[in-house]
Length: 191
Image 1: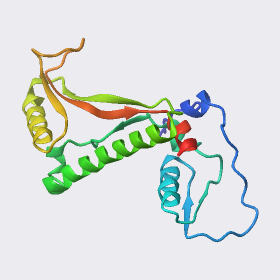
Image 2 (image 1 turned 45 degrees about the horizontal axis):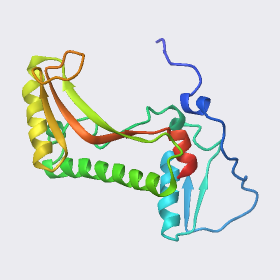
Image 3 (image 1 turned 180 degrees about the vertical axis):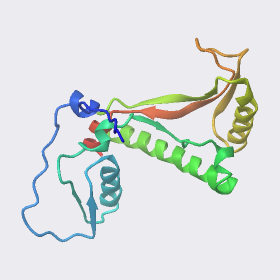
Image 4 (image 1 turned 30 degrees about the vertical axis):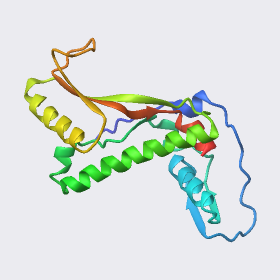
């Protein structure tokens, strides 16, 4: 069996210099919370614990943000890889909607963090688009639009007649401020 994989340099660590070198662990320390991993997730956890005055130490084997954080797409969305109707096959619609709401809450909290501490990571709020290029997917997207609208998500419906884009689109759910982009490497160092 032949394995194919991508080689090269990680985008975000290649674009940015290392903004800060953290001290090495050279002695025993006591803490309430130990976070293993120096990526964006560990840094966000550290931010929340320390903001609540919970003694926290974050450890990273290599350099901060040099693992999967430095190769992520940098696109943030409240939605998951599956739409609400598809998620309903695995859980209740209530749980699926709640997962989207929690995603939106996470976007709002990142926005609040940026507004409080400054935009040091090229952060921008973005609209999102879930679209269909095939006619047989139009009904599914319209159902998705109706569900999102019903549960309070800021969405518009686009059909081929109202398509403002330069590519062929049969239908779309346009999420207003439904996403964001940032440099996850820089964000990790600022969280």
